Length: 116
Image 1: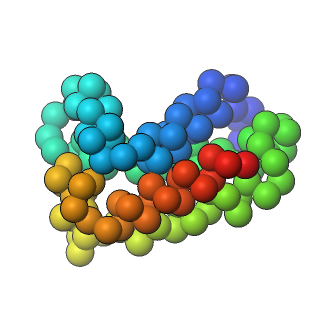
Image 2: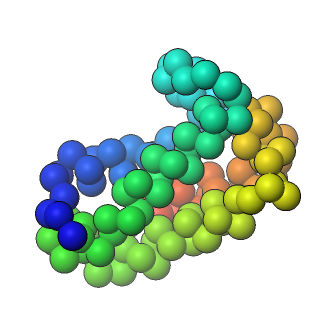
């Protein structure tokens, strides 16, 4: 594994912070990206988190995050994974950020994770 740059840690923590935002702020952030297509845009919330989550072992081994970081961020990964797949495409619509309870769960997990 290539040694991550500290900016990847910052991007990961930013992704968690965005997951912790309320729905209107998440929609505003997504709109600011200028990505085409609603499904692709909503999916960006999980994609940015996942990019950093894959580097979690390196963040821990570098001492950038505490050893229990997996306990903090793992539930977010599990919640997002449970929302994946063809059976859950509706959850990735931008409107679902305000109406789907699963997003409230992700926001609560992200807020909790940021307390480390």
